Each structure stands twice: as structure tokens, then as C-alpha cells.
Length: 121
Length: 107
Image 1 (cartoon, chains in turn cyan, brown):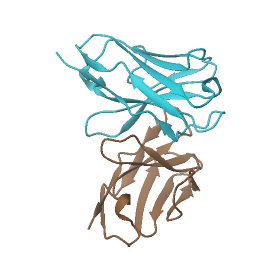
Image 2 (cartoon, each protein chain N blue to C red):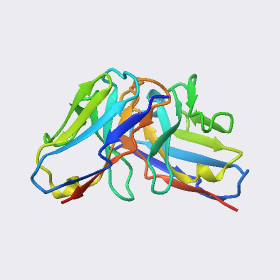
Image 3 (cartoon, helix red, strand yellow):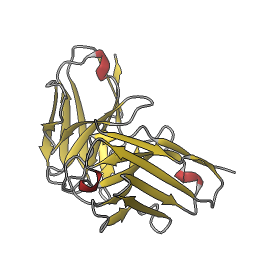
Image 4 (tube, each protein chain N blue to C red):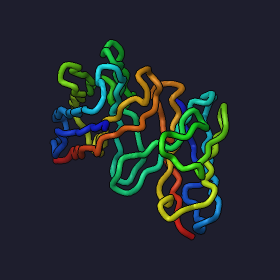
């Protein structure tokens, strides 16, 4: 069974940093592109970042470019999102999601339960 | 960035009736559209990809159509568990983008 478990969320002050993790199991992690998608309270969904299976390619939403860094450790089956210069508008539930196929498809059938990041003083 | 616009924002339908949800892309996305269902407090659930292919385990009452800039999700006979939020998503160009959602509520 595919499982994705996010951790690392919490309360952080504006301008602060936080690192999210997503522990993956039940599939060959190194074969799949991965995504971070966020959802602000009461709002819609937004793709934040994406990373290819071998980590050679990374992509970012304009809203986080230069502040967030996506990475992965295929030996530890873990996806990361390093978030810096955090702003109030970064407050959201952050989901990690696995690409549907073991080639880059662009959509996900497997999502974690999400971790809440709150940026507030 | 491609903007996905969903209509209506809220759709009120009686159980057993048909629901039709629309999604328009600001430029052509070919057939690279997915539909997701989300219930309160839960992660999204993939329903449709490739504009018209049902994901594994999705009931046949869910169907998708369209290409280019106009897309439709149809639920043929609404069940109680279908009342939820629905999002379309394009994956033709990064950044992948979602519509703002359609809330399907019981009439």
C-alpha cells in the first residue's frame, strides 16, 4: 500500500524557516516524480514544487521561487521542502503527492494527509 | 501561468439527479486535465485524468470530456457520498494549476 506521511509543520514567525519531510513507503520511491501541493485555510489547491525521480529537475511556483527548495533522498525514501523567508500567505496545509506513473505524468492519485504550516507572529 | 476557471462555484442538485461541472482553461491544454474530489479535512482524490479516463476504483457514474480549453465532469446519478468539492487541474504546462473549485451540495 502506498503511504505518504508528512511532518515538520508548525507555527513559525514571518521571515522564519521550516523544513517539511514526507516519508514514503509501499512503492519504489526512486522511480517517481514527487510534488508539494498546498491549500490555504478555506482556499483552493496550489502546486508549490515538483522534483523528478532522480532529482535532476526541479520546478517551483512563482510565489515560492527563491525562497523554497525541494529535494529528495532516494536512499531514505524521503521528500523534503525547505521553506525560508516565510510569509503570512504561506500559511497552508502542505501535501506531498506522488506522480501517478513511473514517468512524469503530472497528476497524482496518492497524497499524504498533509501538515499544517502557520506563519504568524 | 494557465488559469483554470470552474463554473458554477456552487451547484445544488438532488440525489439521483445528474450533475454537470465545467472547467475552462485560459489557453489550450490539449487533454491534459485531471479532476479531483475533496471532502472536508481530507486530501484530494483523483477521479479523472487525460480529460476522460477514470482513475482506479472510480465508479462509472463519473465521466469526463473535453479537450483544448473546455472540459466537463459529469456525475450521472448523484449518491450521498458525491456531495463534495471538485477541482479541475491542468498538467500541460508548469506551473500545474487548479481551478478554484465547484462545491456540489444537496438540493
